[in-house]
Length: 309
Image (cartoon, rainbow, N blue to C red):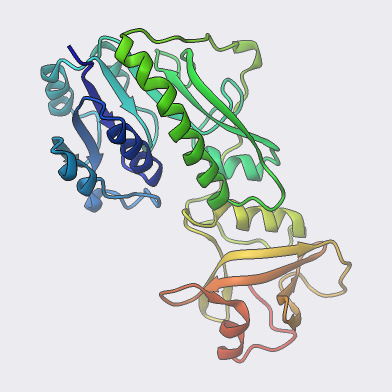
């Protein structure tokens, strides 16, 4: 009898994982995701409905995952495995006792290193050069279950949250192709995590992080690239208007100007002094759509000496 899989996820990453699973004709008996109305704190939320409708898979959209009714329904499905891919936070611990083969969760790091939430932006903010994705079998310890599959990739100075997210999706698609045959055989091949090597990532700033121009250029650059799409973006103020910065560069060039002051406007972009060095604003947003920084500053009548707050 085919292994019965329940998929739980609600993000862009989850969408790609579900798409890969369905392409492999796996026996997905149900999908759970968070409704749009309850996704305010999930910047990379995506609708999974078109995928489930195309394959005739039952799709349950809920306000949050782990309510008693949802868990009772999961029990009734008599599933063999739950794949929790792309959830806001950890899956509820009640999932441990439901599927016969267990619950496989995902985490965008090389577990046991770099545990913790918001791992993609946190890798950038922590200056990590090694990133990755881990599928692990959930147990009682957060992020601590045995590893089912893992991929490593390099993080460069040019990487952003967007490019790391893409690398994570690519790795996940490859790993799904490894895990599904294990599930079909009814046996997961796992490797225990070495707790002596476990580390935790630092906390990511507020959900809407404001740029502190007194920080040095590299730290400001890291904040911008860590919080860019698909996340909410770092911001500052241009006069009374909130300015979200989606893309920037940086330079260690010494500059004799107060932090936050526009010191140069050129084809490179809008160059702003920081506590040490320059930030070059390239793509920013004050209205509905991102625009080139030069266009925004020209429209605002900004000149050299304008100070961003």
